Length: 256
Image 1: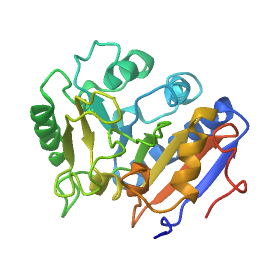
Image 2 (image 1 turned 60 degrees about the vertical axis):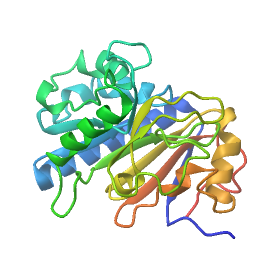
Image 3 (image 1 turned 120 degrees about the horizontal axis):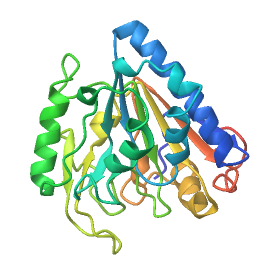
Image 4 (image 1 turned 45 degrees about the vertical axis):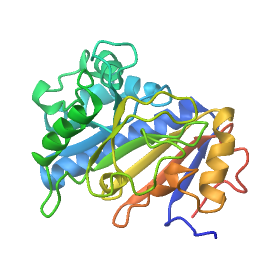
């Protein structure tokens, strides 16, 4: 049975560079507006290769000279259970690209402790989230969440075949099963956290993502097979940013 996803917007760009430039400009707007309205901006970052160029743009002029670094708090949507200096660490990637180059206060950087076993790391991060929780929640309401989309349909560390209601009662989840041959010693935020965000950006680049993007946005509602369909904020906005290679199977240049 097909169930339409909540209202969302799709922006299609000629290439990955244009996508990243647009996302960086919007990041700056969201951060500035959040700090003006609430005194802080809370961001959840994505790992992988697609957001790498966005991170480079944030750490270079002109944005590096204008972002309100002292008031931005940095969290992660998921993490591999590896030490922070491991090449596979999502935190480590951002540390090298952004934090080693800009005046971001260390106390504003809230990493998942990937050196811990998954269950312990998930519990530790739940405690960190509670320290910044919004009223009535056990976690913060993020001003911006960045997510990717794997060629297999996963987002964050929510993999195809995982139960759609996994993590429904908790802001974090230890992911220890193997999915489609992918070893998964990881920690992830859960859909209830993503679905309370004010803004969610999905960054999708490359022809290998085309099938997954089309199925997620245009296919039947199947959140077990396509976990990104679990991300449907009720009080926020979702924007899908795709380059033309990834969007080649979509019917038109905008979705609503």
